[in-house]
Each structure stands twice: as structure tokens, then as C-alpha cells.
Length: 347
Image (cartoon, rainbow, N blue to C red; front, side, top):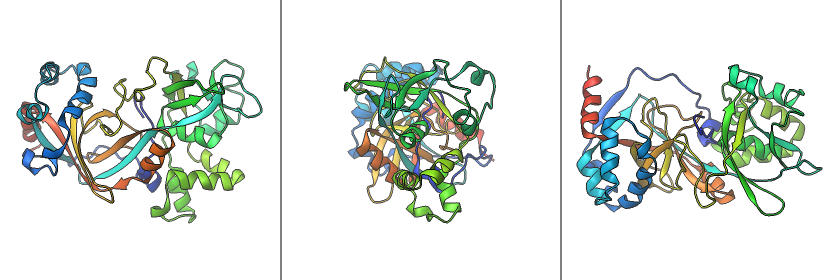
């Protein structure tokens, strides 16, 4: 997770890819736009609007000039083809695409018999100490209680756990109103996948694991399930995000609303935030689309790792949770930057 650091629920995280160090074997290959499968058929104007949503925050001269030009609303396809070059950035690991979404939980601003599980703000001592207490120590001691750190209380500890993985979400209150919460800090412990742990125990094979499968198992096995959740020592705190309109997506790592089907989370060690990214996702439902790298995730590690934002609610969650496909990711870089990257990494 980062910035508004959505900590994701990722099929990949459940399938066992830990956060590796940045590879030293980074390779760059410049392509032609004719090499991008489905490029001509995409809605480039839609991608340009998403690019404009965050490009003003880019302070590098190469990007600021292009953002100023994009604000003149040029022909979108011509804009990308004239001023960018497609670059494949690889680190020796295969491409993998997963999905994420904005969950919606049931909750209340006061606890009662139904709403018993608090959504916490970050305490000041957690900001000062990294790492701080583990998930178990936070939940099984009195360290958080009676300090006014609760934003709301929800009715399902399993959904709350997955809210922490996503890093942002909506809480629907009993009167029908909704509050939004976003990433507000973490305890500094490394994320450990409970899906991987279920595979290690022999409960499931890798191909069987998804968010819904894990939720169902935890609910069928409440005692073992609670202990399984403690396997992940990472704990995410939240903040209210009331400034984001209901019709906009949650805030991503650039502190801008992400866009369904056009925002992708990447590893910023390889892909600059704000960059256009051409996605060629293989699998059952192929995707060939220009997206914008506006988010990150704690399990999104590697030059060819990407997490596609699917929207808000249960349907988006089901679609995102099923996604785990190979393919290729191509970053559109400003022309001078693209060739500079190529020269920097020549042997």
C-alpha cells in the first residue's frame, strides 16, 4: 500500500507472490504503436480524460509539458502516438494481471450488538514507530480502546479484514447514508497472504484460491478462521474521505479518484505514477486497453505486475477476485525519456 495506498485484495497475493526486491536485471524495449494489439480500436479519448485527472501532479518537465498539451484536448490517439513511445519494461519475471475494487460494508457511527468491529484511525505512536504492534497485539489488547480512534463500527470482521487489504471503501450506515474511508497509515509489518497459508496447509490448491473462497472458509471455521486472519501481522488504519463525490472512484496513490477500467496499480519502482500504460491481458476475457498508472499496492511488485480497478461493490469484487491472468504491460513514456531509459540500461 502507498499514499492512498490501497492495499489490495489480489488473487496474486493469495497465490503466493511476496514482495521481492527490485531486480537488477531490468530491460527496456521500445516498440511501435503498430506492435500494440488492439491499439487502433481503443477509446483513446477516455484514456486521455483519465490521464488529465492526475497529470497536473507530475512535476518533471517532460510530463508537465505533455499535461499542458493534453489540456488543450487534442485528438487523443494522435496525442499519444506523436508524443510518447511504447516501452516494455521487464525484470525477468512473467507478466501477471489481477484486479481490485472498492468494497462496501454495513456499519454505524455508534457500536451496538450488530456493529461491533471498529474501523480505526492511526494512533500517533504508530506514526512514530515502524514497525509498531502486530495485528494480534492491536486486536487482542486494550491499546486502541477508549481513545476516540474509531471512525465507525461494522458488522463483519471478515469484510473488515478485506477492507484493509483493499485500503479504501464505503460504509453504508443504517439510515442509508454512506461514508467513505481511505488508507490512513499502517503498523509497518509486512503483508502475509492468508491465501498462501491455506495452500501451505493443504486446504486448497493454488488455482482454487480467491477472496470469496477465503471468506467462506473463515466463516465456516470461526475459531480457526480468526486465527488465520492473525497470520497476517499487517494492520491498516483509515481516515474519512468525505471530499470525494459519491459518483467518483476512491482515492489512489496519487490522491486522485481512480477510474473503473482505466486505472491500473503498478510498482512505482519500475513504472512512473501518472504514466499511460497499455494493457494486453490474456485469459478468458482478454483486455486490450490504454490505462493510467494511478495507484500502487503492497502486493504489486515487479515490472510486469498490474492490478486493474474494477469499480465499487459486490459485483466488482467478484470480477476482480477472479482475475489472475498473464499478458503484457507496455508503458507509454515521453519520447526523450523513452530513449534515455534505453541508453541507461544498455550493457
